Length: 394
Image 1 (cartoon, rainbow, N blue to C red):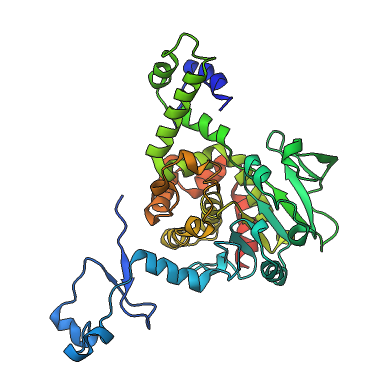
Image 2 (cartoon, rainbow, N blue to C red):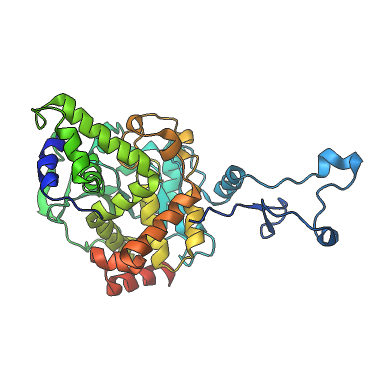
């Protein structure tokens, strides 16, 4: 949080700011994938003769009772149907697997951290013939990844490092502990070798961006109240800690919808670059990933699916399949959207409730008018969106 003191003096001068509960559905029987019934609905006597009876008779009570699936049971079932069965890579799916998806199979994949791949996963990845992989994590996460440059996983890939400051992409070696040492020559947008595989490092969010974005939403008096607790406000470690507490309280209160809103606003340069990569058919098949494949990966997937014309509720359903991924990872150091778990409420941030994505998509409409409006705002215009649509659906 060493940047907070600098931010305080700037934000005091100028401060800017930027539901319906989900209807839970459950399948009536495991044999049917189309028959659904709300938890709030009770079958009428007149309809019982044409539907599967809940109880056939007393003797068969325990054998024939068909209970509605819980949301988690439904999620696990869909995960079993749609997730790629890797051994160690979590939360991996083809965007074509989304309900009523228009995306063609084998073109775009979403995943959790690829460097976790086991030998069998490496074989499976090879069979998918993924030509481009995009790492969306923060420099802190790269630094803490002991297998970041594992040759068994990434040996066939040329490393390409995107710099947000100037939009430049260079080939090199990603060594976060040595300030990301890179070669000096910029990479061409389209390389002559059509068989070349590339690995792109695109850090779309980090803690500093979350701090800056969150503090810009706070009222001046909230910031001032913290700073005025001590005469040495800008230099006091205790006061800097208080500022961090205000930031974390705001994040925890705002929850995942706020995290997504900040991601889309503060991380838009990286989002635009990733969309440009996906829109280049020469880079397909392409996979993008973060730590768990839930938040940053989930938002990129939602945007791509929206451009492809996929229905909002299908996007929500795909997002919700990430609900149990942190439990599967079982690593308390695994970061959530580039933030440390130790600073966040686990009940709020480790899941993927459907309503979070509903709220996020609704927020996009309220703030930008539509997903197209958001994409216009980040510079991914209609011409670029049409290119993306073509490579996804044709």
